[in-house]
Image 1 (cartoon, rainbow, N blue to C red):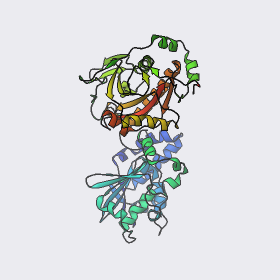
Image 2 (image 1 turned 120 degrees about the horizontal axis):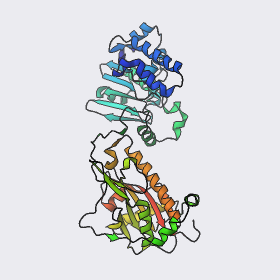
Image 3 (image 1 turned 90 degrees about the vertical axis):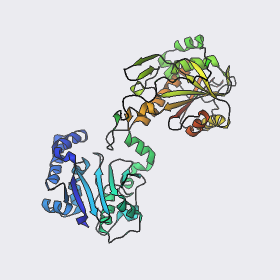
Image 4 (image 1 turned 45 degrees about the vertical axis):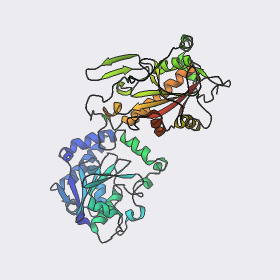
Length: 451
């Protein structure tokens, strides 16, 4: 089967020493280790006479007797993206590539064994489909294999031990850690991880995968949505009047006192929170404090920090019991300090509170439930690979801000870890992928017990 496998040079291979040393400076602490890696990589590349060379020829040139030893020797050249491994045959081609300097090849299967047939694909694998090829990746994002559909489809047919091309692909799926045996069984820490959590973690951090990450502005430099959302002309609004006494009382408390006193207070009083108290809380936490333009985009400033100063979040106020406000869902206009009615009580509106009650361990039926939404494209136009996870970090910042302000105002506040984004879309009429809910926080008067 060895005649079907080739080592192919990548574009980066022209700068082998520079590439290897650049990556290795982040991995190894000593120059000698980096030099060893560079030397091994150059040795492998020196045996590749053309853009693609059969591995048998590489083994002969380097006097390497087995495939297992060959992949051990070529691990560095593969993981730094200098070399890809290609299987060629009548069914098509499969190109195996490293996506991370963390990549490590597994041992080549013992002759006569087929780890793919006994362990199959890892639960962390997924496939992306192009016009004529399918690309198999893992959520760990250490490697990928792109293959023709004609070859991809055979992976799910009854195994043919006589088809050497298919046997090569199956063996390399194990070597490149796409199988259960080669992936999660090699690292017991993965037992506690779910697929989507691993993919989110590796996709939003540097070091794994080849996609762009950071402020790449892949959709252009102009934000598709304005910084300040404006109510529709036919929408009414309720002006809010803050409580100066509550504000002054909160301002008089020291920061360390507030931090040390902060707690999740899930049980609300039998008396409803007043609209003045709610207005004061909303203004201190979310009220706009400034505006500016950079020549292309407009920006708003709020009391809490936001990545890139984009402030993609909006606040919806679900009122259950608040003196001075009817039950229903409102949007808080942070620029004007007003509430804009969105919808009245309904099955889905009541469901927002049931979801919060369950998320609090059946302890909190909120007087007021704040639902934090995100206008997703406000972040995605600028940031790649990290747009959604950054929005979740912003929710954490907002939660912390809410907790401290609630404590300073002697209100009962509690953040929740779960909410129903589909329900929110129905009750607001928003598109699920345009502006969706990503966090919830209860606010109200504390019970007599203060819990």
